Length: 273
Figure 1: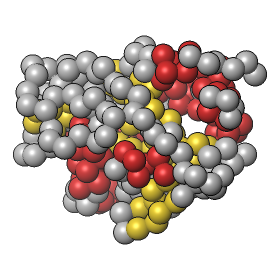
Figure 2: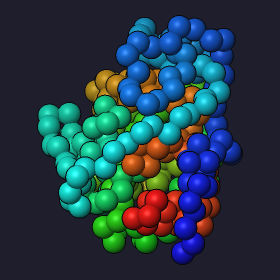
Figure 3: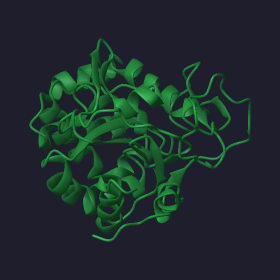
């Protein structure tokens, strides 16, 4: 695998093939994480994902910066497990944690990938259909990558319902089965609420989940707090499009082929980089 040398930072901030929801700029959030460019944020509009007060998303196309992330001094990455979930060393630098169900792989893996996505985003669906299976097989299941999924329903009308349904799963296996099913009909999240709820029920059945339990969970909005927290978190990081990935703390926007992922991961594994 060739070394990427100076190409790595450029690839990690490459803006391509992503879904976004631009709007007029507003005031930037306070206290940005070290090394990151924060994009101005504003309350969600009714035509976006929710009318609930206080939910904010970035509003201008991103100019994401690659933060300066210093690896831990030892060869074994530091992992913290707390009430809010798992934090690898790069996640600690970003100030984020992983929900217990929406993860894959070993938290002690040398590379952490955090993805912000929307079930109604065509680029997100393309990534999960085309590149993710090989990424999972070659790097997650082999202990090289710890993978974290974070909800960011900003590009589809009812993507927030799909996001709530996903985090209504009770186990990682249940989450990823439901995750795959919710992606199969992305148009459902851009129609009306009744059609979206009907698709959630059919997706739950396809995933082997308890359909009535998922339906009740979404109707009672038991998991909206988790979706809201993930949305606020993304705003603080300057994320304005989906999918956006943080690879050991560096940002990559858009859907890219598995060849790009292989090169990026090889470069991070190369001690000369």
